[in-house]
Length: 124
Image 1 (cartoon, one colour):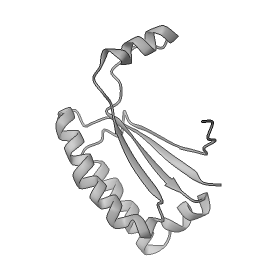
Image 2: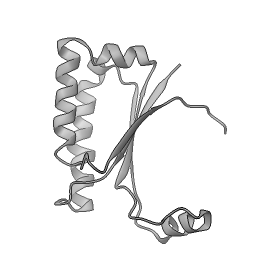
Image 3: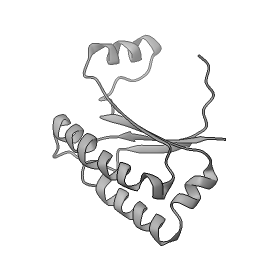
Image 4: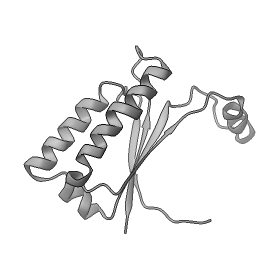
């Protein structure tokens, strides 16, 4: 069963949305590409939050509290949890994890970001 990590990212307070997106798209994405084979990742997608009125309208129509949305969502796919564990084990995997976490800390506010593992079921 393939698995996906979803990382709901909020930027560090000293960064503008543009600075956050630029660093994430250019610097961090390059690091993920560099480490892809080591960590056994199969797919990595960044989605940036749009600053549009539809965000509030969507929430209001459902009774969801309207708040400042996160700055973006990263989705990372692996073939299995076993691949995740193998990819981040050993000295190479441990070093890859350390580098990714260190780099994420340059643009993400960990205290307000969220992350969780999922399994997908395609509906359409």
